[in-house]
Length: 342
Ligand code: SAH
Ligand code: SF4
Image (cartoon, rainbow, N blue to C red; front, side, top):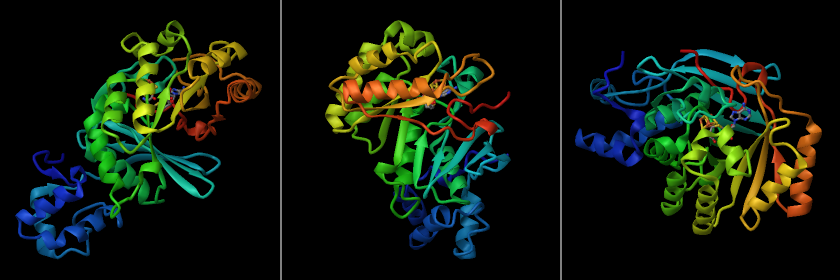
C-alpha cells in the first residue's frame, strides 16, 4: 500500500515541483524530472534513468509516483478502442479509455470513482458514488494512455461528474496543459457536465481554457428530471441561463449532448423543442445513440431518427448537429458504459 503521507508527483504543477526540488538544493534537476514524468512517462522513480542516483533516492524517500497499474486491458474488435481498468492506490478501481480516430488519439479520463448524479441510463450512475479522484489520479490516467499512444485530445467524459470535483479536475487540466509536459492545449480538452450550474458559472468566471459540453437529453424540465435526477436541483431554465452567461463571458460555443432514446426523446417534435430552446445561443448539438447498460432497458432507435433529428436542427434552426461515432461498444467502453463491479 502506498504511503499517502508522501507527495504524489503527479499532484504537482511544474512550479510546485520546482519549488520542492529547490528546497532540497536540487532545482537544477526539476526540468529533467518533469521530462521523465511527462515525456518519457516513467512508471517508477527507480526507472528515471536520466536522474542522478542521489536525486532518485531523495525522491524515493520523500515522494511517490502514483502510476496506476492496469488490472485489465481490453481492446475492441475493430482495434480502435482500448479500455483500461486501473487500480487506484487505495484499492478503488476506475476505467479509462483510449480511442483512435484517423490521425488522432483521444484519451477519455474519469474524474470520480462512480458518480452521485444517478442518470438512469448511465452505468456509472447505476453503480453509485465511491469517491472523488485526486488531481494526480486524473493526470496518471492521461500518462497511462500516453505510454502507448500520445493523445492529441483529452475528454473528461469517463466515470463521474467533473464539476462535482472541480478543484482536482482544474489542477489536473493545468498540469496536462503544460507545454513542457503532455502539452494538451486549450483547444484539445473537453469537459462534459451533467449541468452543475455553479460549476459552469465558475468555469466562465475563471475563464478556464477547456471546451464545455453540457448533457441536455431533454428540452423540458419535466422530461429532463425523469432522465437526469440532478435537474431537480438545477432546473432547465437555470441551466440554460448559466450556459448563456458562459458563452457570453468566454465567447465560446457549447456542445449540447443528447443521448438518443427511442420513443423518449428522438421525435421530430423533440428536435424542434431543442431548436427552440437553444435558439440564439452559440451551440452545437452532439447526438449519442443510447449505449446498452444493465440497468436501463431502452433502445437507441434507428439511424433514420438520428438523421431526421440532425436535418431538422440544421435546416429549420441553422444549428450544427453531429452524431457521435460509436466506439468500443463490444468492450463496454462507449459513453455511459463505464462501471466497476463493487
Ligand atoms: N458526467 C458527465 C460526463 C460523463 S458521461 C456528463 O454526464 O456529462 C459522458 C456522456 O455520456 C454524457 O453526455 C452522458 O449523458 C452520456 N451517456 C451516459 N450514459 C449513456 C448511455 N448509456 N448511452 C449513451 N450516452 C450516455
Ligand atoms: Fe454521472 Fe454523467 Fe453518468 Fe450522469 S451521465 S450518472 S453525471 S457520469
